[in-house]
Image 1 (cartoon, rainbow, N blue to C red):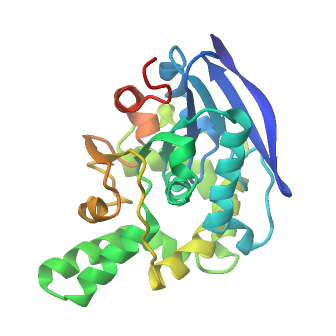
Image 2: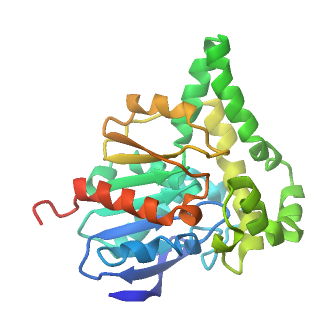
Length: 301
């Protein structure tokens, strides 16, 4: 079993993706996908807990860490991010389905990939934490706002307040300036206050300041178009949504809307804030392991 990640590169068009492999080379493949503003280092505490059983693959998504940083906003659109994910799994596991654990924007990206016609042939299971399906979230908001009772209005308005920072990210240049020059240096301390975790648990890459700034284009390229015209699609693969009950960024209300589009959905509560990979790695790894056992990539093995 390899405990030190081995780095390689997967090329998708003009994008080079830094890929890291560790764990049991004979095990089923488990792909870990990070969100904003992280890199594969997000899984520093989680990957070793799964490496005894699984061949664990992580990668830096475009714009983060050691992967290519596109300059255009349009290069961060969800279909392109999902295509990166498919390029990685095709490279690391060309003949066998993979399992996936994703967080935050990593979850958003894999939701997009999971809605593609190829998903059923390539993904055995998908565990997601604090990574909403943007189309389902927006559809939920539209339906509630179309029937403006106090109860229906409460959910979308609470989520809007929780996501206020995404509106600030639409401003030109200012978010990048603030994130690079000050906020990145205070990130562990901020997460300590925001998520109630020990700042010493926060594990980041040396590229954090740039990753924060570059990742803003994910919000600019995808939020407004999806919120205006959501197109929720059916996701047929087995999905486990780990619902962090103290998540202050992605609230719980909209998860009631998922069953309509995700027929094989399992909802697993976790007494955690948004950054469960830092604060609750053992619980996250255990839930992922249990879900994979129910949906093996090698049936009968």
